[in-house]
Image (cartoon, rainbow over all chains, first blue to last red; front, side, top):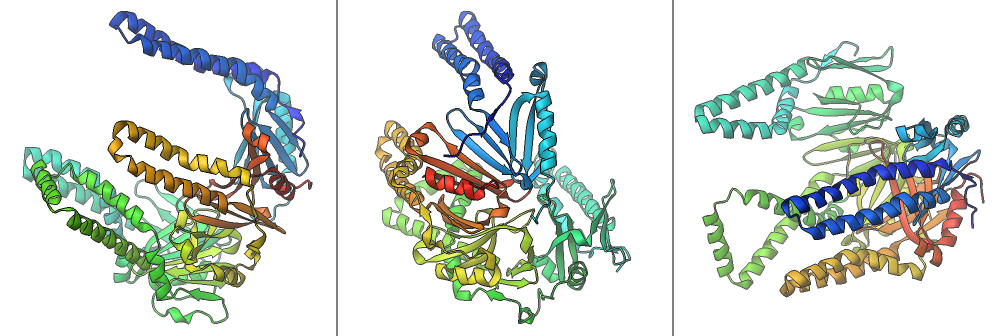
Length: 159
Length: 477
């Protein structure tokens, strides 16, 4: 059995994911509340409101409280001289190997939520696939980008 | 050849036809709306539209020039009506030059030249819609110093020493008969009918319906068989027209394919753009021992075939594949006999995956229209069979620096990929897989139009996957 990669991503990732999830859940809650209001105003069927409420509660529990933590626990990466090794996934665990000589470019990006926690994600593209390591601390992310970029500068045989 | 040249004036006709094809919607709209006012307006409107289309076609021909400068080894295109574009392509960057002739081209003795570089777009980098055959040939000769292969006239003139293979008429007929196009045609016919249905008057429809019902079962059955037979014949004709006089040859570092009855094609594939080679056996061909040899080519090749891969040979016996590859692509010959199949315990996943949709359908039909339940029952049985075949046909085999993998969606596919062509390796396991020591593998290679092509082999033994991972990893074990 191959060992999993050793590096974890930033612990703040959990907070960032929670905030993102809260924003999406808010939409669901608003729909639920609108349903409830409509029930009192125009006699909208109450059972639909109950279903909406159930979905909101359950999905909020999963996406805001449970999954971010599990996801963080599973997320691992490791950069070797010859290749990049990534593991992620809660139910389905996915492990990916990307050889350095196949890397076309690396980039870091930072959305508004990641910026709040001083995080950034690193995207690694080959000619066929793109892989993202989410939520590394800004410093680690740019170091990683430079490191991969330097390692990927090996002589390429024909593609 | 360094003076700017225009395309053949017949381009105007091509452009016009293209314009009409893209504005069919407008033509109909204009006619319908103006016809409400008066027929004259409708006709005037159409004339105006056609005039605009014609002027646009004419101008886009007038304003399109191409130059080939030998001194600088560059092909220069200038085009555009309002926005002028200049595109310079260096000879060294040109990967392939494809010549195509459709019926119109052949009337005027013209040819369409498509020039491709390694860039990955859906369209060719440079497309000369119509130049004379002589100019097209000359252009290809200038841009690509390869042995001359005549396109239209004397096909026998191919150099003797270059390996070459043609398809026999008999094989082509079998290829047509087993192409499985009948399904596609049925779907197209159905779609066309449902569109037409709205225009057929209800009276006529009802009359026709009662007429058909009045015919009785036997005549109805005969009619259905006749229609299916007709579609089958159309399918055969379609395949034969497409692959007529199919010839593949290897000229230096390129694979050259010529084929087509109505539309003649001449395709050049540089060997180094080939990402994977394999063969596809569809459900009709497999029991007869026939297969189609295909290749995955990086970049935007315009030749579509079986499952959007490039067809290297339309039909051959399964036993001939090795000899064929030996002749054209010796680096892709592998011994397939030691292929690692799936363990028994992964069979259930395949069966569940393939039968689940049909089982759901069965339940739905049982609830809504129980008298038709036999149809989904048949589908369930077929899907069990398909699931079993998918399980049985999946496997991988590592042979030195190559891997061959086989899998089935509907057709059985066997692909051979070089280690250096694989862009990324991915292993997936869900919790049931982990318990049972199974894993799914995904290998990615460069596909068409800048996207990747991903091969999945599901539920392999974890042991096999680990061997594969060590094989792929650049760190070794």
